[in-house]
Image (cartoon, rainbow, N blue to C red):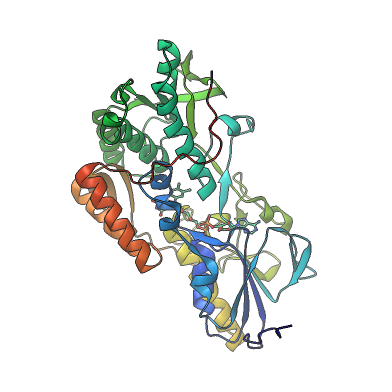
Length: 432
Ligand SMILES: Cc1cc2nc3c(=O)[nH]c(=O)nc-3n(C[C@H](O)[C@H](O)[C@H](O)COP(=O)(O)OP(=O)(O)OC[C@H]3O[C@@H](n4cnc5c(N)ncnc54)[C@H](O)[C@@H]3O)c2cc1C
């Protein structure tokens, strides 16, 4: 039998749950320190979620937006990886339950992010998948591409219309990106490939409960996003909520009036809640399940347990604003805690600092060469915003290969409207 490799130095045990932006930033700050870090994740890969909609809309392959966690941390000698689902924390015993094992820790960092929330309508999940994981993206891609295939073979006009109606629920960045991309697939990427059905006639409806899209953005960018979507041919319905979703479509309500849209492809981009493991900490959570943390991002009563990234509920003491659920919030908070632990290991008397979020701006794409962006107080739209969006996303993708492939895919999309990942995987569920 090969002896176990002894490549981990001695030192306090740090367990990080979640290999997303926050967990990785924390781990990176701890590499090479006198700690024994274990990175736990139920997936074997880090996922670049901002580009997930490109997988769901066949512009990129899943491997181009993900990287194996083991490969990322492989060269960091004090870091090991455990593939498993963390289910509970016992802060008093200082153990974390992962599948059927207990992991003892000296420091614990929860960086588990968020999952879909259907606001008490869990049965909608089956009919309206959300976008959070590679599996979600492949399922959405399957449904979108199958809708065109089924429409091609359907002679019944009403059924064909329903096949070619796509409803996206939720007008945040993901909803806006999905709606724009689906319309572009139908209108530009595939019309020549279908002989019986005119895919350009596909109807894409974007539902938003509030009075504008991209509620977290300045109002002028919300309006620009709406105009761009409308010019692409997307029906934008503001102040409209889904009241029921089933296998045949969506019932919606606007100004007290109910309406039914028959659709075979509904996509959920309306709500998220924190991963449930935070509840086992036994401390206060906000209505979205985020764990309320102290100024050093530890939890009340347990200075060695931290929550970072999307899973944490924290209002910046300087601005009073909650840290938004974006990649920058995750990276900054993860790095902050990693550095804090490293300092504490060097000097246990060290004074803990207060976490401040640095807002670097926000951006969302609407389609080819269309995007909106805010950097500081400046706002951008159209091609300049799209160019910025592309550069930023390529810079933050992990791995040279992924960056190169993203550039090639986007060049193809820009010049030829080509979507090279048009594969239908999984069951070929077709209705009679
Ligand atoms: C579709 C989409 C588009 C987005 N677009 C943008 C964008 O354009 N710009 C932007 O800034 N932000 C964007 N975001 C938000 C951004 O991706 C998140 O803010 C960021 O990923 C949060 O990082 P995190 O590390 O906190 O969580 P995540 O990145 O979600 O990582 C959490 C990790 O924890 C693991 N995990 C969860 N629970 C457990 C458990 N119990 N046991 C073991 N492992 C577990 C998960 O597998 C995952 O790897 C987008 C999000 C989505 C879903």
